[in-house]
Length: 336
Image (tube, rainbow, N blue to C red; front, side, top):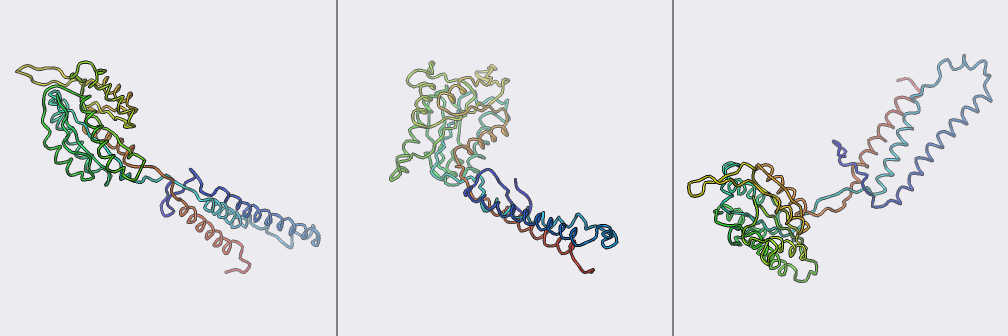
């Protein structure tokens, strides 16, 4: 929870849970206050005639007199939470991460069900993704139809990917498996370079954008097929996030006749499942952009626990200050 002025007030975890021992302080203050009040009332009953109490003290003490002490106890409890070292989740950019964009440029991507066309809309969303990607993340680009073309090897220079996206052109056939294998090779190359002196491989992800099934080869379980490539990605620890892009109403003009090219996400879901990744579906540029952002959250950042003490300290000071002010206003002995 984030509040104005105070900042983050988190109780999701504590760095020093032993600090809650300090809660004995507010408990002690409350016990002492109750004990002093009880002893005061006992002395009054002992030395004052009960029949004359009404004439000596016509107006009983206001109940508001307890509010300053109550606020003081609350401020000490809040301070105890601060001492325990509350933490919160913080996103830290992964500068060693690798993302390979793999974009289908087969003829079906010319369909205009997503204006101005599937390919143009995909280019727009991918460009937006590249420009907003976490600085330092290594981004690469592969286009594929009948063959896979590595347009940009993984690099932190995202402008190179933006420039290459502008040159995507449609071609025949759909060799999804070959494109995945090409992406895995690119990731392995950059991992070998970055892995010098670091035994931990960089986190990597393939983002596969397509509107339908592979048709080269016909069998996705063949040595160069999409399912075989997805299993290889699983073995290498590289999940594939698949995005099925388009609508059921898509069609293209081929040799003067209209050919229906409805989006078909069954193979894309299977590829994601076999690789250990996630499958998404998008029918608009905005949905596609949201899918890209979801992928970036998964691979572009790592979540660590950071300190969240400042907000609790500010709240403790605020409550203690209010308690002091009310003590002066409510329990003053001399009229102003």
